[in-house]
Length: 477
Ligand SMILES: Nc1ncnc2c1ncn2[C@@H]1O[C@H](COS(=O)(=O)NC(=O)[C@@H](N)CS)[C@@H](O)[C@H]1O
Ligand SMILES: [Zn+2]
Image (cartoon, rainbow, N blue to C red; front, side):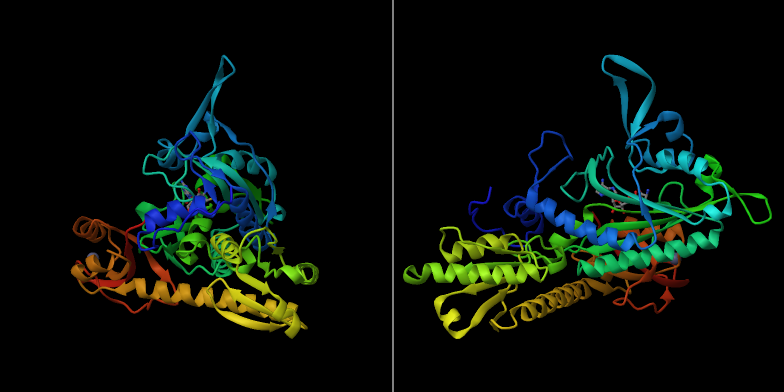
């Protein structure tokens, strides 16, 4: 699988670059014979493992992980009117078991509210059971009719983290929404991916929610990618599914809920934001291999060099680093190509001269070179990796800042959304939003923006000139 595969197209032609990098870097194989369904290569799966272990670490602080069934009986699925309306065009149905027709058709979960909430109705009895915070990481199925694309728009979402929480009051659920937004912000900080948090317009909120807070990344082509959403469900589902509790005064009360999801779009953003024309560029925390050692073999001292490389590998492994020696019979340049394509953050080169001078040559994935002392190599490598993550974060932030532009007129907004995100003043009413959509052919993405790169200064609505507040306008995936 890992023979040299030539060079990537430039990232300027993002769509081609993206499709090519998925197979050249061995992330996803798109040749599976079902539309919108793709296969993880082992390397891609190892990136997924690192990314989702960071997500689990954050969630496990005050959630518990569990697992609900994939199959949802039609009668449960059809209970919440808004939810049905939102998903009826996207649900896959199982109608047969073998050759016999099922008496009740079963939905493949597009998301799991209608699988989980009948069980929550049995589990939640008293205020002492609250708050309940569970999550699962499962595959979900959506019959997407828009253009499907690996990691971005799938029919089988293979890595759907969905959290579902239950609270005693609307305000407690609101606090949970804020906690979830903070958790997503921290998660994307660890991916070194800048995100913009905003409130989706009412007509774009999750079916059955009171409101939706969305997390958007800005892709290299300037289009935004919704990489996470947090929904305040009010008591809409608890009333439908009878999730109620006995409060301190012994009265039965309906519970209040939230749910929030992240899919493998987080990996699409990680690859797209940091990748370059040589391949993946991975923050050390998300890299399956953090350090690759390339011994520079000279015939007469081959054994000594290999011994020294093995000692170096052992020392770094014992320090908890994910390190590999590449001792294949290839010339160094072919090895550099291979590991750069896979996004390895740091390469160490070890030749006879380095051994004599007691140094190790290093080159990080951005091409910054240094000569490290062999003595405290572990500490120097750790420092290099931390500095590398910081430079990835800064580089990505600079790029996003350039793509976000304030627009005082529709023409300016029209220009900005050609390759980025426009920030316009909007009064919040749907008719002005429709006017913007009609004139620019892009929709209002969100308001109540939370981003250090966007000012919250208010002004006149770009359409009706009434009092407006900053809102995002952008083309999105
Ligand atoms: N077809 C898809 N392919 C890949 N990711 C998707 C797809 N549809 C949605 N997502 C991602 O999944 C996230 C959560 O989906 S959602 O519909 O917004 N929310 C829910 O399903 C709620 N039940 C929260 S768990 C979205 O923010 C988006 O990032
Ligand atoms: Zn207006």
